[in-house]
Length: 235
Image (cartoon, rainbow, N blue to C red; front, side):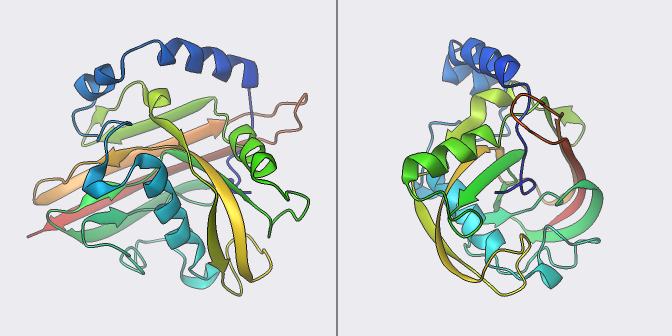
């Protein structure tokens, strides 16, 4: 279960109310509010947001802990394993604050989900059905606060960008970031997808964070991360 990786449960009732209210707002409003983002119902480069969330997890979870971008202290592994010529994947931290410097090619869209959670049978063998995996992924991605700031501009209504993945497979390497048994497994993810359109050549700053508080009713543990990326987009 991912809490950057296990992005934890919290304030389920409050989050449900927020999602109910925001679901009543037309999706097009999100485009008007955040022109930097692809809309939640769009298909960047031919794939749905749900499919992109799968590709992001398959990328991140295939990389061993010692050079995984989520464990990176400086940004030295920013380019590791990038799986597509159209989109550049960035990672949060496994917990707590982080700051990284990264150079990326011009023309690449950028995918850095502001909050994302997955549940797999490798991590919890009791999750034997898709419905059980899905319930786990959704419950583990309730948030109290999510913030994304691009070059000083705070993105708005991020709750509108929430999607669930189809059932998917990936393979855990030895010494993976969750300490799960290595080998193939099935999973489902739930994500708040902040999918940035290509940035102009030059220097840019991304600031992303999440806060989830203890919830004694559900057994959720507090979790928080924040990450600052200093990006150089190079022609």
